[in-house]
Length: 163
Ligand SMILES: Nc1nc2c(c(=O)[nH]1)N[C@H]1C(S)=C(S)[C@@H](COP(=O)(O)O)O[C@H]1N2
Ligand SMILES: [Mo]
Image (cartoon, rainbow, N blue to C red; front, side, top):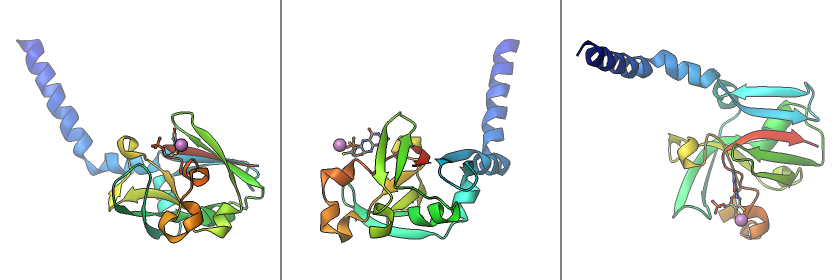
């Protein structure tokens, strides 16, 4: 009986503790993107606050994995790379599920490719392709409506390696 009461109390405390705003702040201080390779500082780890501080951009497009059009918000890949003085021919984008793909640097200058952290006003999380998802302006350019580009839409993104 006593053990049961403790378990209930423990559960209640856990629930109320996670509802405190201080935990939301902690989540914003946890690194969610690592950039490595040919950048000025060698390796940087960026948390949500750092990523949200980059110029925000919005893009509306269909995707191959969702129905209808969605509004993605994030930052331009080239803005991040320029801020870090990235120099290279390609960026290897690595996902949490070990998926990795090489993306030519030119893509980020030819098109407004974004790193999205929200879709339709909601933060992306692990359950819906987040926390970060590379999104191409697919609807604006016919040439992007092609399988060669589809596989560069890395979801669960966590590392960019500049080569
Ligand atoms: N993290 C991650 N991103 C990924 C993939 C993947 O397996 N893991 N598949 C890629 C491929 S091959 C395509 S065509 C598009 C669409 O993927 P899906 O239809 O498997 O969701 O996402 C790309 N991004
Ligand atoms: Mo694919």
